[in-house]
Length: 66
Image (tube, rainbow, N blue to C red; front, side, top):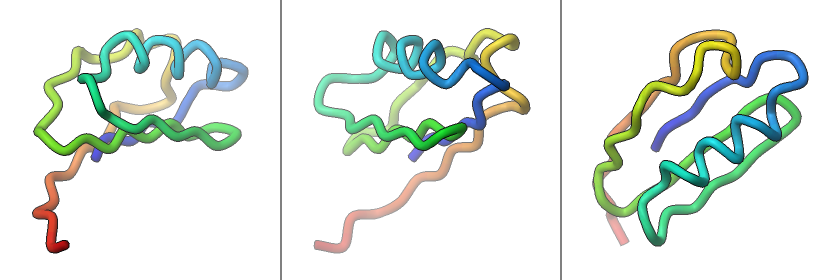
């Protein structure tokens, strides 16, 4: 799982950037200021452009249980 907080007014641009980076089959979600990627395999993403985020993205690895 990967999550980033978009800079003010940059959520759409961050979503576009992430959709270009996301591996096939990954799911991308958004709220008003957050963008989340969930992928079955570990996703190695470039750092987003600094103008699109308020802080470095966070990422976590989970083991599927079901």
